[in-house]
Image (cartoon, rainbow, N blue to C red; front, side):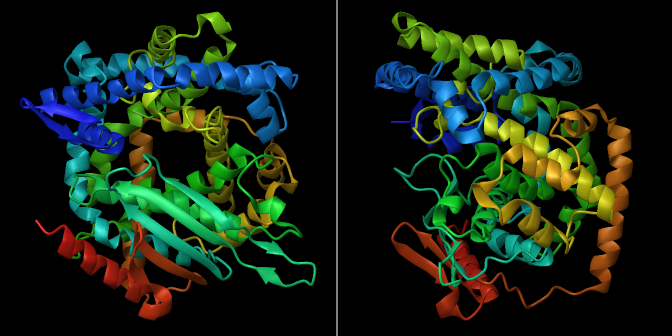
Amino acid sequence: SLGATIGGKFEEMSSVGLRNRVRVDPDEEVRKACYEGLTKIGDFVTANGFVELVKVRNRMAKKLGYLDFYDYKVTNAEGFGKIALFEILDTLEEGTRPIMEAARELFAKEKGGNNALEPWNQSFLMAGDVTRRMDPYFPFETAVEQWGRSFSAMNISYRGATMDLDLLDRKGKYSNGFCHWPQPAWVKPDGSWQPSTTHFTSLADPSAVGSGYTALTTLMHEAGHAAHFANIEMPSPLFSQERSPTSVAYAELQSMFLDSLVGDADWMAKYAISRDGEVIPWDLVADQIKATHPYKVFALRAMLAVPYFEKALYEMAEEDVTAESIKALADKVEKDIQGGLSPRPLLSVPHILSDEASCYYHGYVLAEMGVHQTREFVQERDGFLSDNPKIGTTLADAYWKPGNSEPFLQLVENLTGAPLTGQAWVNELKQSVEDVLKEEKVKYDAKRAECADDGASNDIDLDMRIRIVDGDDVLADTSKDGSFLASCKVFEEYVQNRFAK
């Protein structure tokens, strides 16, 4: 079973639990043990069918006339091949390599030497202390309410949809957050509207440090997917299903744009509130910026590592594909792309295993390029993002309604007026900490002044039925509880009672 040996005793943990301990546990020996637990995933998957799966996937793709399995997947999902994809990614990789190398040098210098760059130390030393200090301002049990308030303020509507939220981790649960749609939204031949049905899962442990922040970010992300697919307005359900030809990058752009708001100072100034009603102070927001901004390139490089690993994996000659060669390749790509072994070992990334998510991760990279370009466009147009009431309409009209009837690259260009590039992303990485602090302080102060003038709304209407579940158990249901906020209260009380310390 998965877990880590801590203090001579084996503790069973999910991959999410292990990653969280690597990120926040103050004991280096515990962090190292949890990292080693994550590396065992690679041993397991390569010994239990992944080697043969890689070979069979490639044989299938080549018989269909593609270069390999990666070429098959990207062509079907994005409408262009592997070669064109990596021409885009190579530009980003080459453009950010010097930033990554400089950031690693600075990190080692500031954090006490090369030991800081060990994979079990990097995440903790970058933000572990800040994460622990921020934890009280992101109570897990209020995450659903804060997500609803934020989306409502942006005028995001789910158009009569039904959503099941399965938020809590439990033994045997699939180790990744995701959304699926048993019922896609579409316009029927008689002109009537068929609302969507969404099932949304995540792996929260409310007792873990950082669980509230992670839960809120995951809610913003997966509920962003749900909002997107609830608003596709086309004359067939085939335009609003999540598989090919729906672009991976197109799907992820919507969710990643919305979850990016959680890191903005003005968003936190309104929604990061402790159980005692205290708002996160500016000094703590500033400490987070100082701790993380110089090293944001690490996240970009970690994203890039997955597609570069899968590209190299499916380009291997079949006779060379073995458990040992796959593990060696993963280590090589981590060192080449990330500068050293990764806090999240490549073979622990669940996407590489499943059919629908394999050769998929490039979509996050392209989407993140689109996120920064879209954020830049909205910021220049309106002057702000947090609680911007135009965002719901803008996203619905430009990105959501067409579904997969238009290519991802064209949709981004249609809205922003420019072809997709990584320039907005690179520009942010190049910003000095001082400049970021100045910009974010202005936004934080403006939002606090606005909140002082406006009380919290007691009317949250997302035009959706929400059931909060834990497996087969229904914890809250807006249709029975009477309102969104009433269901939030039921869920809050459930979490407090179940996880009371």
